[in-house]
Image (cartoon, rainbow, N blue to C red; front, side, top):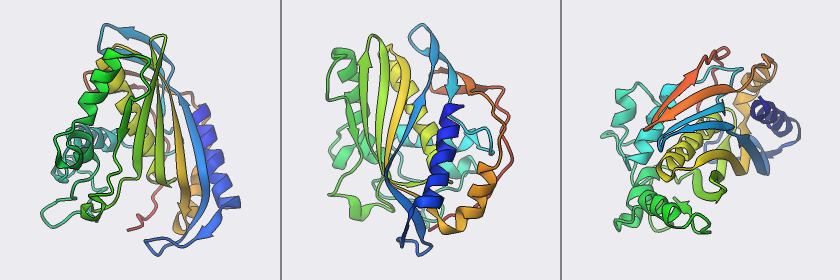
Length: 267
């Protein structure tokens, strides 16, 4: 899969050529500025308004990934939720270390998506309506970065900007991440972005084409190096994973991931 090959290459570049940088967590990283990942979804068939089939869902083959994690985050984000109860219900613990004892995270990602700045501004609805009204518009944008509320968030959003481009019935997505934990976080971010693109495509009767992601601070934590080297050394050379998507439900066809490779979360 071209995406996984390029992702591995970027991991190696960061470890070999990255800049040593201290960070908020105290762990330390090696980092490169403004790195790109490009993913061709290869949607080959669209059945009716909502059902999409494709050849290349960008989930990694050479290490184990859990669909439950990004499915749960997708529902949490798209529903504008700010409590981690949905994650707890699905045995997902990616936000546990940042939530209050009551499970609250403040006005984070989904809040800004569905109720920006607490002003009932539903960016998701505005996006869908805008695309359906004007395919060639240059304002098909979602922005999650809200300086007025940063201090109230458990963590400021890492993925903070989406823009969509439609041409001849195909829809493309551009994403900006201010910060990317390249080994643990970014592979799940990529799957989440793909589900968002599939959702928008299904709601606008378009065919998902590709995603381009710019990661401003693309980093590998120093205590992830051994895990990264183990992963990069796995070479299954598997093809992309075929998929179907309907009404928010993603089915991956014959996904057989590699081994679980653990690394500590930097808090």
